[in-house]
Image (cartoon, rainbow, N blue to C red; front, side, top):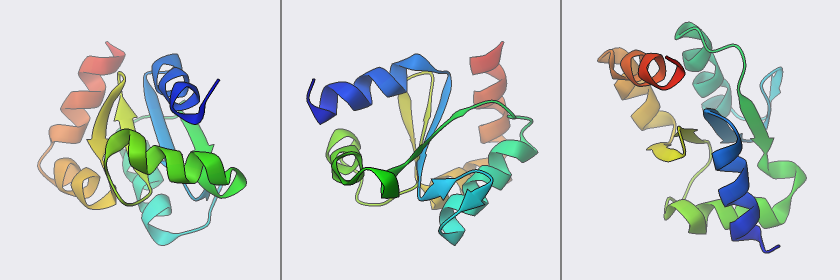
Length: 105
């Protein structure tokens, strides 16, 4: 299985998937940590986190998969939502909560 197939399977396996640097309990960058906090603020306690620092193939592959140059990257219901800035903006406008509520309903 190539890296794109692995990513496709990861994204499809859970409702909320976050590609990040580190893990939720110990983020390795501020943007990843902030995204985890925003998910928790929306009531998301159970999500799949993929540490891109642990797998260089995933770290490069996720940028190709999404056509997005940075990490973290959030996926909800298999769809790319965005990086830290987009997630923060969606949260401040109430859109992230709506997206998550409808995905988990």
